[in-house]
Amino acid sequence: MKPKLSYTIWFSQRTGSTLLCKALQAIDVAGNPGEWLYRWLEDQHSSNLTELQIRLWEIGTTQNGIFGLKHSFHEPHFGQLLELFCKFPDCPP
Image 1 (cartoon, rainbow, N blue to C red):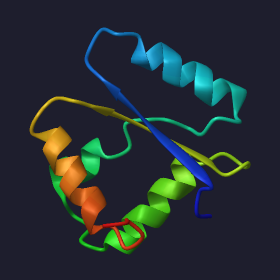
Image 2 (image 1 turned 180 degrees about the vertical axis):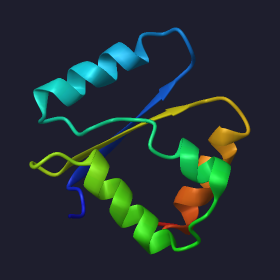
Image 3 (image 1 turned 120 degrees about the horizontal axis):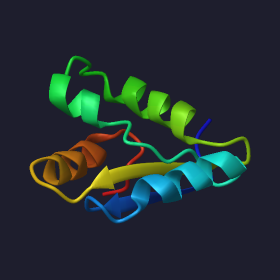
C-alpha cells in the first residue's frame, strides 16, 4: 500500500531515537520507523528499486497509511540514502 503520509527520523547516536521509534511502533498508528535500509545499502543485492520501495512501504507503514523510517546522518549512509530516494519510481524531482 502506498502511504498517505510519511516521515523520517534522522538521528545521531545516543539521542534516544531507539526509544522514540519503539514507542511509535507500540502505538501502531504512527508508522513503523526502523533502520530498514542499512542492509540494502551494505549489500546492494537488489537493483529493482520498485520492489525495494514496495517492500519498504510494507514494513514501515501502519494500517492507517502512515509510513515511518529511521536513518542516521552519518556518512556515507546519509548521502547514499538521498541518492537512493531520488531513484525511486514515485519520488518527485
